[in-house]
Length: 256
Image 1 (tube, rainbow, N blue to C red):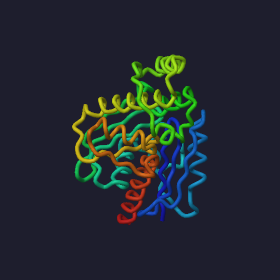
Image 2: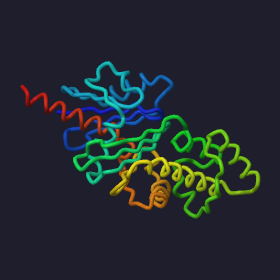
Image 3: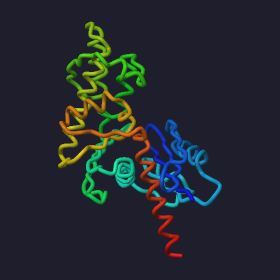
Image 4: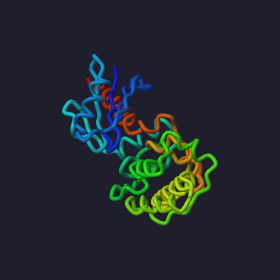
């Protein structure tokens, strides 16, 4: 038996096929201008031949008619974080267009959360703009910024920050130093937002940016708390959806 979880995000659509203990198969593709098409592609890539309980989450969670259930990102990210890092009590997720902070109790139930989806600053989209403007391939950030010295960034508005970066480049500042300064600003903004809740224990950091050591380490420094990540961090929401799907499926079997 399997369950399928799909996270239809603003930038990427992720899916995992789950057997109750581990991920059997996974898929991640850019969310196109037609998110219905992207979620359909992930579904058709992962759906097995045998019966499967499918749960969708994310911005496009209502777009797959075959889904057995759709749930919010908060619920699914909490469940996925708890599966990947059972000690999780505090979760920070930076997505393509939003930032989420979630507090869990000892049984991994959501106690409180905050979500900022009103501004692109400090999200994956901001980082895409930054790397494009500075001509640093995003996948090479960790290597490129290894010896960088951060430059103070005065603006975190996506439009004004791009202009400031161009001005700093024109003044002779290195792209690497500007990038590290922008990353520090992103992490400080995230920490200011996150500390509106009473974070405790090790913090689990998920989302696409969690795959970069420079973000994880900078966030840890700004928080002054241990920060944990996982190689499957970008699949946290999809995995949580699949875990919930598995639990729903098992629950139905017990009632028969």
